[in-house]
Image 1: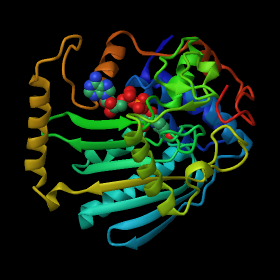
Image 2 (image 1 turned 45 degrees about the horizontal axis):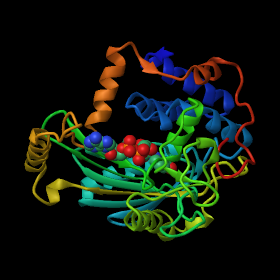
Image 3 (image 1 turned 120 degrees about the vertical axis):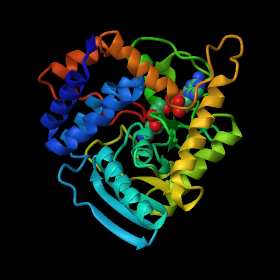
Image 4 (image 1 turned 135 degrees about the vertical axis):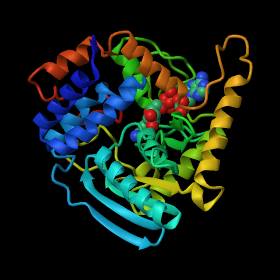
Length: 350
Ligand code: NAI
């Protein structure tokens, strides 16, 4: 099913409002889910709405959160999200970070007690739109084996950075530190497709191709990805006073309780270094030079990070809209809030 941006966003927003979210929070969440879905990150788009709706309905996302902001220094602060919807907490945290970086050059803003915040590239891009450079990372529930281990300890702990250029391009790098995000496995499951053996392992730690048999994900690049996962958890968990490592709450256990997740935004004003205009000029040069490198056999072109996402978005609209799996579309337009599919299962969605 192909939908326009307005149709998809509207359906997702309405569903989350029916589940109990206020219009403002539902609008922000639906906007970011659409941002993700239209860029081809189907794993972090409409497929998530039923899960969020079930969690909202069952009380595991605070619908009237009491946000608190504590400025801990000229360049640092903690935004406590009171387990409100993660998308809104991450946006509010980034607004604080942007304000602080513009004033004092650098901002290190932690967000504590939040729910899942989806595709984190959105928040890094918010800073790039304001002529700032940003990195953001967040925790996710333990589902990846540490290098050489047999049990999950860290989550898919994503990292994103974004930077402006002198033209209308923006570099937005945005990745899970596992070979694949869990949402990609969810997406494959929803389409009844198999997964490559490099994505995940079964209960014996062996590679699997059936998404229904996945027991744990694996870090990117072995021990190196494992180190990056740890870095994310130190910045977004250990440092912020929220649960860390294997103590991070599961996405699919007890949907009536807040998740207490952490995220960190680090924002830098290029004016404190080379100057914003020169920085943007250089970034444009970087993107141009990368694009001019002859592609290796089997690759059409060398892309800068985020370029393919924009091309996917343009292609979707040129071809009549954003593709949404029929089953998800039926759910979105139905009167049902959720089908009780996620609560109290194993640590993965089923
Ligand atoms: P991915 O593997 O599709 O892309 C990762 C990065 O590599 C992107 O920045 C992309 O621009 C770049 N890239 C990919 N192919 C490229 C190519 N051929 N040339 C140049 N650059 C290329 O992303 P992944 O790891 O599957 O993550 C998907 C989404 O899931 C992200 O938005 C991420 O934030 C989100 N996520 C969120 C989590 C959460 O708990 N909130 C957990 C894990 C992932």
